[in-house]
Amino acid sequence: MLIDTHAHVNFAAYKDDGDEVAKRALENNTWFINVGSQWETSQRAFEYAKKYPEGVFAAVGLHPIHLEGREIKETVDSDESFEFKTRQEKFDRDKYKQLALIEKVVAIGETGLDYFHLDFGKEEEQKIRQKENFLEHIKLAKEIGKPMIFHCRRAYSDLLEILKPEAGKLEGVLHSFVGRWSQAEHFLEMGFYLAFNGIITFARDYDKVVKNMPLDKILIETDSPYLTPIPFRGKRNEPLYVKYVAEKIAELKGISFGEVAEVTTENARRLFKI
Image (cartoon, rainbow, N blue to C red; front, top):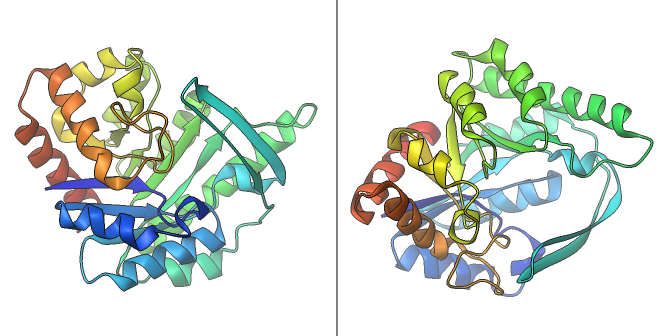
């Protein structure tokens, strides 16, 4: 069994076949957490979770890029590029809390800091807004006793500073971790998990981090529909492909696929209480 701890089958990329994608994963003993990035996708994540008696869960939160309205155009590599428009949203704590209290909603997120997508001339005010948004999510997670899914891009130093006072008071995972081992050590010392996805199958930059990571602090994810692992680069990602992430971790650490599957599944169950 595998658990994809970060998918977005609730996104528009699956508007025509989301249920087929979900069933394909479940039929292959792969569970997944649909992660919200704003109110609409958070609601949709819950709707998916409600639809299936087991194996599909939800996380709800406001991603930092949705604090502004803008067009996002990005190229990952020669095999992947994407673009979409963000709709500006302000975090409504009471509204998100009502959704977050539902049993199949297992986490608050994804939320955090994203300094990759900042508007020229407005960097500092947008950083401040992101930090304020993040702190509101932290308060909510602590109040209702659910873990967090942290998004962080080009902002690990600031994320560390915000999370230091929360060590021992807050559970969570750094989604799609792409930092250095020295940074990973700090987050591990604070008790957080690190999650890896398809990036590790086509980029060698994170081999050292994966090799050094204690297996009992690793989660696996896809970040579907993005970051499709080898051997499916160039195609839309989906939760079923999380097995290729597990296989790469096994290869890098010199252990069996079965051990990676067993331990990461237990890690996910422990953190998200599933």
